[in-house]
Image 1 (cartoon, rainbow, N blue to C red):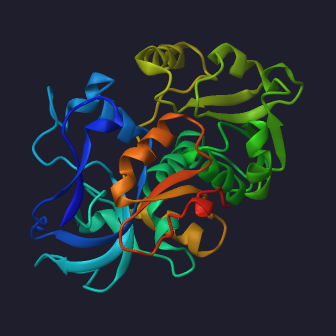
Image 2 (cartoon, rainbow, N blue to C red; image 1 turned 180 degrees about the vertical axis):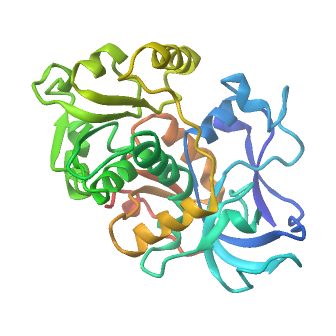
Length: 332
């Protein structure tokens, strides 16, 4: 099969398209013929090998042999292990897989759910990591209730576009913070209020929020807490702030009631089912910025590393996507 293999740590130049053996599923695993995969922040941390913790599962000094990036995919079940009971060959699925940037990838049965018929493979592939992170940040860590006021800092990014829609689905009044170019997109996915950070400083405004989900670490925690209600909370969610951001959030959460600490987003079958139901009902529609064919994964990483992706960057593998230049535009 064709797969993108990471040969070292550093720039996208360490990625090579190779012909390697197809993975063999275990008894509780499923072999998926990948139609689309998506990239997210964890993928480029793994590409760079920084922070160093990113190397723990890839390889300390260099990636293990035939390491394939990508953890999110959508496709068709090719074969199933002897212990698999919920899915069968031919089913269209999406979820968390290992080595998504390839023609075939393996996943545990609990890591996959049926793809909603009303979303494309590209949209479904965009959903697992970012969608689940948004769900856990808003619903679990943020404990959003109907009628509460929620601000999403970084509302146009991969997690942000899901967080806006999930908070809205939970009955919140949502404010999204983004740049001028992304105002229309954020408004189109349900935000009642949109703050263009190039023109307005939300941290100096009079409005108060019950929850702030911080996806980009662009403001100090004290700035964010200033615009909270007395019982409001800041939930940090950003790898961009580095370990200092993570440690500071944790220490403050011990002493400051309004300060939350980083939360762990692990894919669970029950949460994937919830995400699937949100998409199936039309309350959540994944936002795809650009699509790239498998052979252009390095170029996809270069675009992602610019930090201006509107929604998700998706890799088309099975021939369902059109990677022509005119199709590389944001869509809600």
